[in-house]
Length: 217
Image 1 (tube, one colour):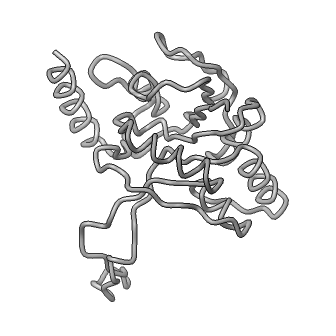
Image 2 (cartoon, rainbow, N blue to C red):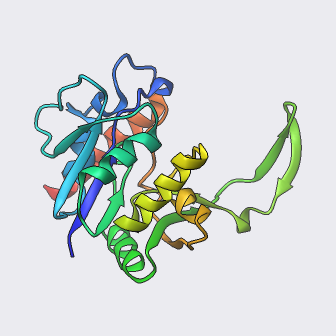
């Protein structure tokens, strides 16, 4: 069974306060995309969607396609580029992936067709009522969803095609598959696989990368 890693990396990353695409922002002397692909467990092939008219960062080895206007459009283009039976869709901004989580996602995706890692919500979860503290929700019922998310390629492709036909836009691929009526299995994620979103995340990532380098000697 052929497995393909699909990485939509065409986002601007405006919340990082940078004047370059998020995947090109440097951390510890290397582009973010370099770390994301370099720390990911080996798969049969890697496809990355980059911003239009953008050359791949130096040192990054993968197959490349031109990204779309949205993350969803970029993933669709990646899906049409690969012929692998099973795909892992992973955020370019989550470099510290746990190999054990990846393995668990792959096992669950093979069994059920769709799987995603998730972690419990650690803080009190409330509704914002016009800038005031609103109703507290039962955080035990909720999870924070991460990537990589794993799918049978044909299932995810069908989900994207259905979304296109209906003009539906979602923030991740698991929602599209669930909209088909197909269940998505959850597996335990890892808090270290956080998504780099704000400037302070770069400082945290740099420290963790240094700690990993020290650990490996």
